[in-house]
Amino acid sequence: MARCITVLFVSMLLIGCTEGDMRDLHRFVKEAHKDRKPRVEPLPRIRPYESYSYTATNLTDPFSRGNLVKRKPMAAGSGLSPDLDRRKEPLEQYPLDSLRMVGTLSRGDASWAVIHAPDGTIHRAGEGNYLGQNFGQIMTVADEKLDIKEIVQGPGGNWVERDSTIAIVK
Image 1 (cartoon, one colour):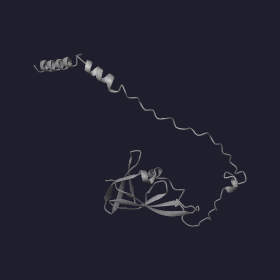
Image 2 (cartoon, helix red, strand yellow; image 1 turned 180 degrees about the vertical axis):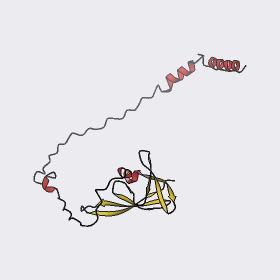
Image 3 (cartoon, helix red, strand yellow; image 1 turned 120 degrees about the vertical axis):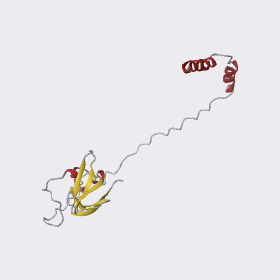
Image 4 (tube, one colour; image 1 turned 135 degrees about the vertical axis):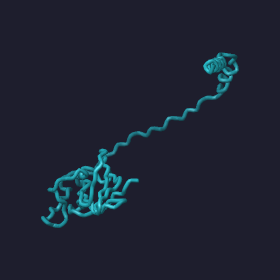
């Protein structure tokens, strides 16, 4: 029964779409814009090319080797430096800003952070573990953040400490 009603309704809609007396519509379309002419914007004026002669031959060449400043060599044992001989930990292959702290684990007095790496792996890291590409070492693990001390090279070529944090993602 519902199928018959649907077929009847669709056939009535199709009957309404058949050609009827549409002469008034055709006449309106022909006469509506008969007197109008489209307005075309004029083309922009093209200025002639002006050549420029570069006359800085008497100035120093910015690409010469004489303009390079040599770094002063660091004296041995001159202070802070990262341990370049130690084995890298898995979280040191990722930039610090790409790592996300997603939780904490604790047993007794020990606490670990649960770190989500960009490749989708989950890692457990505690105080003393390294992460990030700037020799970052975890100093404290709190419920809401990690305190990290990084060792980065300063503008003079010397090594300086920088404090960073990773907050938990909620």
